[in-house]
Length: 413
Ligand SMILES: Cc1cc2nc3c(=O)[nH]c(=O)nc-3n(C[C@H](O)[C@H](O)[C@H](O)COP(=O)(O)OP(=O)(O)OC[C@H]3O[C@@H](n4cnc5c(N)ncnc54)[C@H](O)[C@@H]3O)c2cc1C
Image 1 (cartoon, rainbow, N blue to C red):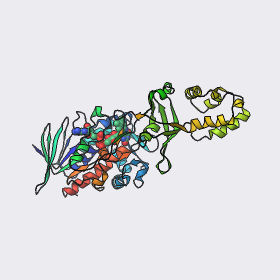
Image 2: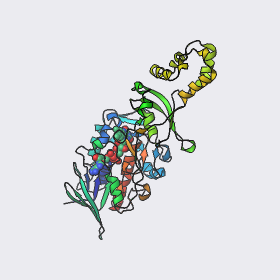
Image 3: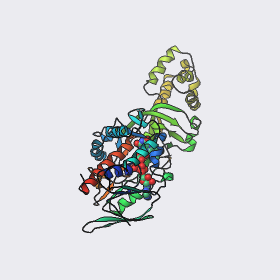
Image 4: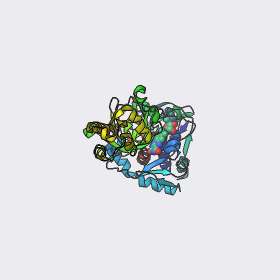
């Protein structure tokens, strides 16, 4: 039997970060994880280099980069532990990093640097307190004992653990191959907390095989586009690179839009952003005797132009032979390409899960739930960030807020 102040379930980004701060505030912590290797998602993130935060994050405009039934919920935690705070933490650990694109910060060497630093933080701080990490440890049950000094009792594959506070940091459902599970949602429901509907996000889009067969030969091709879904106030648009795959679309543009795309909705892609193509081609008609495909190949990757020309014989006509209407239609087909994805590649390929523990049941100051002493942090909460380091920043910020809440619960502030 182990007795501790805090039991953390899940040794990923949020769980380990919270454990280190809680220890440094004078608390004893046990972290359990059913996986044999810790923080596997951190390891594989950002192509092995972890895009660990984004310096363009604006905590006061959370709906700009986060999706949730209540995006305002994350403002409190994000403004109390900011990307700049995490950058300071990286400097303190002497981990070299660089900015790649749109405020995204990546490790220079490898995500391993970040994992080692997270584990190092669990070793420092007041002597007499410790973080004990139990790998390959399965939670069999968790019960609350509402005595004068209330506590939780966890039965695990490595013994019984008693603690007055439990932090659920089990992440989302993506990549079950490396340990993702629905445990966090089940625990929330066990204690009477609502879980908002979940779905795979930051995930490649898949099209009906017959309709996609015309484009599958473009697999591997990447180009900058604008991509959008939804109409009016619901419209969401990204300017990013799009990657063609055998089954559909991937790359940052498709991943970003997948977070907002709803089943049966269409998406619109502009393959030639920043160019009024209709006007440009109409003007060219007066000057050029070349074939349309030759003119368009100056603006589009050759392979793409070839595939498009197979859809419409007008692409092979010379400019003077084209009607104005045909020119307008071709420009429109490239700049407002309407597509209806059949589905996504699902949790096996998704980076994150949209939805999770309802924020209405949680304190935005401490992430404690309506169930006293039970906290939820990181991706298990209904807060999902854009591609680009926003999900890790939520993990750090929510873990920091929670560790302070724990210190308060134990009068260690
Ligand atoms: C391929 C990929 C690339 C990504 N790249 C980035 C990126 O570059 N930047 C970014 O911001 N985000 C990225 N993300 C998202 C990011 O990894 C997560 O949002 C982040 O790790 C969430 O932190 P967390 O601590 O909440 O969950 P996790 O880091 O997933 O940790 C959850 C932990 O809980 C454990 N667990 C789960 N179920 C149980 C159970 N039943 N019993 C015990 N333990 C359990 C897991 O084993 C895991 O160790 C990426 C995700 C993927 C899949």
